Amino acid sequence: MLLKTAIGVRPDNAALRLKLANLHLDRYAFDDARRELEAALRLDPEIDGARQRLARCCNLLHRHQEALDALVRSDRPEYERGLAYAGLGREADAVREYRRVLADDPHHSHACRRLSKLLRASGQVELLLDVCAELHARGVGHAQLLYTWGTALALAGRDDEARALMLDRARVTELPLPVPAGFADLAAFNEALAEEILTNPNRLSEFPTGDEANRGSSRIHALFAGRRPELFHALLASLQRAIDEHETPAAGPFDPWPRARPAQARLRGWGLIQQGGDYEEWHSHPGGWLSGVYYVRVPGIVSAKGPGPGCIEFGPPPPVARARPELVPVMRHAPREGSLLLAPSHYAHRTIPTRVEEFRISFAFDVVPYREVPKGGKVSADEVLAEPL
Image 1: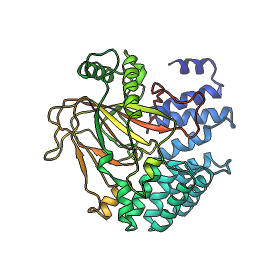
Image 2: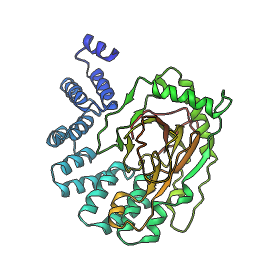
Image 3: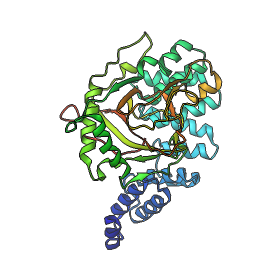
Image 4: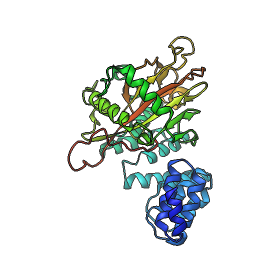
């Protein structure tokens, strides 16, 4: 690796250590990242962002006191400090810290998620509703807020508003993908894309279960590191055409999701490989506004009947499913090769394992709003960040 070679030549360069730590973080190698961050901080105690990254590594390694120690010099609101407090059983301190984070940055979706869990666990649903309404009034419309708000409304017995947020079947939309440029039909494109995803040298298969939904499945984030990066450029261009034409009218007086449609956004995508018992646990996509999945290869056993092998299901968030299972029925969809499925990013969903050794290959993506409009206007779908959810 070039960075390791450079560090061997310049072992006292803190910036190189930080870059190597960032690569380890991208690969979920948190202990390796921790060591590099500690080395960077010994060389330069003021290097920007290193203490927050070190605290993140320590929290993910369940070394919560060390996470607090990493942030001891900071008096500003820190999300990782809230995580450390919660990990140490200091829930009241965690709530205060998450509320400080949101007061400073109301768009901080992770703080919104963690605060929601703590307030629900302590039975403070009305306070959670107040927090959601306040964030919305401050212009927040990200998926985590809508997911949190729908959950709180359901637990408070405000059923019509809860259903409007949690699942509208009309907004789970299947449509054909426009045939990518340079291919006669989708079958030829899918064959080439499946091979590109399967042979990508940067497949990730180990994830922190508390933060990621993958249960055995593998992901490809480094989309352009394979042999035929032009396939992803073609796919993203077709996806952008489909998304630009996707209409999202308001469905009622209380309907925050279509109003949150971003004027400017980017596509963040990743390849997904499943076989056998691999599946995705119930989750949402808090970083997006609209999310989708394009089905590249679908085993013949996939069916909505019986246990639904290989299907995707949409339904209530798990806290609502446990407390009020009758409120929102689960919606099951059987994927078809060459089809594109779109849904609001805050909709809870999961996949069901196929239990066969054939590959189920898909390309998932989020439409991620820009909080600030970039220079030059609308961003092409070719601008894809290979970052985890």
